[in-house]
Amino acid sequence: MKIISIIALIIFGVFGLWKFLLARKPVATVNTPISNSVSPILEQCISKLNSKEQLCLSDFKGKKILLVNVASECGFTKQYTDLEKLYTTYGDKLVIIGFPCNQFGGQEPGTEGEIAKFCSSKFAVTFPLTTKIDVKGSKQHPIYKWLTSKQLNGVDDYNVNWNFNKFMLDENGQLIGYFSSRINPMDSEITNLLK
Image 1 (cartoon, helix red, strand yellow):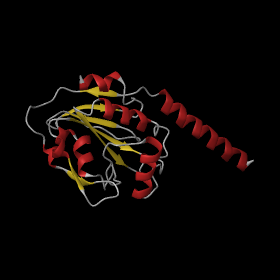
Image 2 (tube, rainbow, N blue to C red):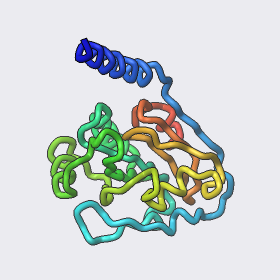
Image 3 (cartoon, helix red, strand yellow):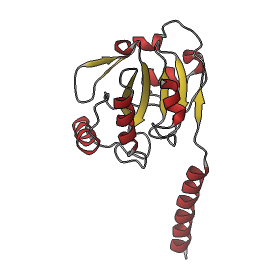
Image 4 (cartoon, rainbow, N blue to C red):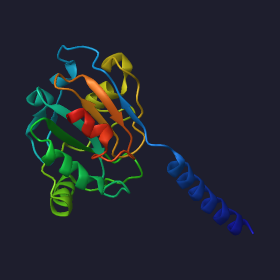
């Protein structure tokens, strides 16, 4: 009887979680830049995926930047296809940076070499990817500290609550948009910021 109760709790728990996740509406927040000045976020650098080379956000001043926490084994992993499409379509005015993260369901367990191979072979990703990072918690990378803290970004506090959350910076590094995992990269909420 105990086993049946445990199984029932597990089934209802999983069903309840999926019902909660599916019932949630996609979140898109578009902001007006708080300033025309260059944001301090552009001073941040991070190691490129599977490399000792640095990727510095200042290299992309003059373009919008879409920052996305990514994972290879997530239900949203197929968004790599549309992220690449967005990158190739708007590459003259946009750079996308993917930040592999293993904090949500352990869905990015691979080594950096495995992640690079997966993204290249399965999705032909050409946009920059960084070293694997934490996007929340005590080891949160400084880029994500800035993105998620109103005190730093001047706009709002945000919670990265799953893989494929997206943040849009304007040409000066000002935060102008946040998009939940359920917002597709080719959604008009995002593409309208590129027109």
